[in-house]
Image (cartoon, rainbow, N blue to C red; front, side, top):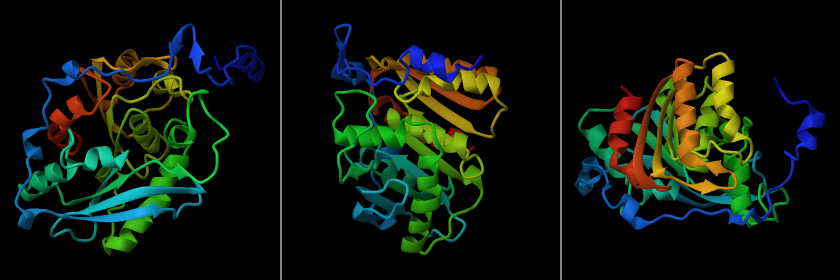
Length: 306
């Protein structure tokens, strides 16, 4: 049964988490040994300059009425020979996925899969969280600074706001800058992210299945930052949405006052299975990082877009 408002407040569920509680602090502790076996997937090897798509860079992008008083870095990848009715993929915390020396190297993978004819030409948007112009007054935990709090407000909340931002503000900007029309088919629109960016990817599709039905979540924060731990119960008790989900987590994933990421992702996978969703779950031995996800990134796209 749902909690009534009085019970919610009596239990202190509206309260910000203290910076330290029960001798524990928030934070991610990764040991490089956990991820030592993971290398970028073979498709992440760069191809010749002549066969690469182009990348447009936009500094201090601020064309949003949803997350006002923020500026952010945004990149748009445009593959060769792309035409109207193109597919699109959004990457939250975009620079992590864009880096050509990082664990994913997403444009290299897209170049290779597109050139091999394995996937349709796909425009990719690598978008970072907003950097707030003014102090952020609402925070889930006292230890967050303004930048961490803004990222959490955008990514961790379960509202329609972030999806509205992607599909109604960012997507039209992409079309105007590239001159390419994006397919209206939600099955050809994918949202990807790690940690809080992972739950943001899921929420965008959950709230907007008419806009996007493909989700790639790496070590998603399905924990109690802004109520994300409720998703398994929601999946089990609400009508199934037309969403295809690829989840990853690891034995050494994050463990904080907000919850245990490994357990939370296993619980999400169980709920997706129970509710009859089209999903795939990869559980590795790494930490709270992109190393595991990067090692299977090409196969993740093949599965999502099969």
